[in-house]
Length: 585
Image (cartoon, rainbow, N blue to C red; front, side):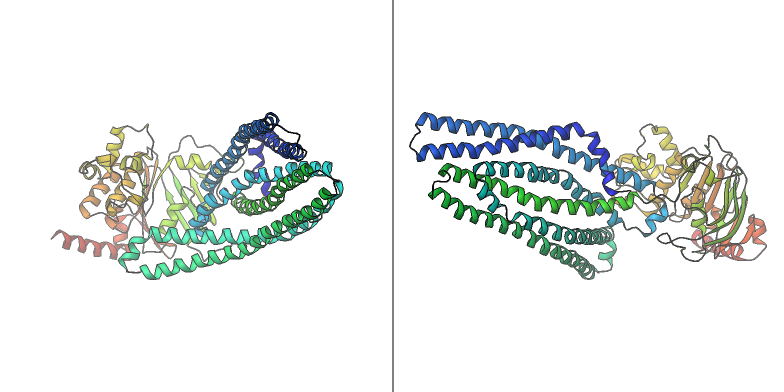
């Protein structure tokens, strides 16, 4: 799809405002063309000594009236045209954000956050400039330029022809420079994305940088990326710096021709002094369209480069989306089956690395609890991510109530699953907003119950502003355990038939962890629960426990059965049991 088609709907939606704005702009241009005529009449009458104060006042009043009309219509075109460009900016930014939210998790595995931020800010701003002032400059270049030339021809055809000699040079110069500007604008925008990403990472990790005393080194890295961005801008400036002086050169060349040939014709009385002054005034009006031609080229090339970059994102299809005949999910018993599941992470649409999961076969009956243990890097979190289709399996199937989850509507599937990730993420709002996700329909009673189940209620009520406490960026004022319990409360607040917990007690003490485990045990039978944990105590009550190593199931059974195998599960349980005894003593 042509990138220009991205903004066509916004032009069509605002077509009446654009029409009014362009009409007002043309009216302003026409009124400007009458000012040199009044100057001509005034100069001619002054030269012939055929003017009195009354007539001079009339000329001045006419110019004042024209100026007032210009003010009114200039306000109208700025309101309509520049207002439309702002609406285009808003529409594109909202569309970009909405589309980014539809993209699969794998897209963000290789796309930098700073790059996306640059698209949503700098690129869309350049598109706004191209569709706003770019339209204005293009209109002036055509309408005002053509009209000024018409009046100049009316005054003296021969003089006008000489003045227009530099015009073909401007066209050729514009074509030559526009291609170079487009390539260098793309390079500048890419460098800006890199700069945004480096700045974002350093600001997000400022505490780590200060803790390790790496301020100088990180400042040096930022200076290096900043220098690259400046270097690319300087290369662009070299093109722009050549382009605009070239336009001025041709404009001044035309002025020199007028002064010599026009002055000569005035001396020879071929044209009147008023015509000579008016001709110079029209040439002054023509100078802006000539400059506008260069400026609009500048704006359009910058906007086009940005539009191409936005279009590349909007053309990126989500890897995980509903099939054409996707099945709705009104209710679910919660039965989950992993059928010979294998998975690998892909990189930039390629084949990816080696398999993370291989040949996983597990059956979780409705209302049962599946516990998953294993050493770090064994694929536990990856396995959980396959249930709500954060990622899709590379081979095999994941079934919900006997149906392949890829055949179900994604929104319906996820609405039946409460997912608590391993790394809790909090927004920079209040505790209430983080637990309820900003849903104002959730009652205080429901929120308090969820917090109580997550062993969080007493902690929150101990804060001066309890649930209205602002947690700061990523919950900076909270401890790791508090953040984890807020994420757990958010998960428990959703009354879904399937609960997926990724290490829910990894950052809390033994006593709090015991309370959370007790809550989870109470839900057994009423909900299907899949829980990953490094603590055996968090899964020992599960109906079925599997041990993953190197992406494969090496053990399967209940707590008693696995203790008899004397493998990873049994050894880890005994070690942790000893640690808990030492802690208790």
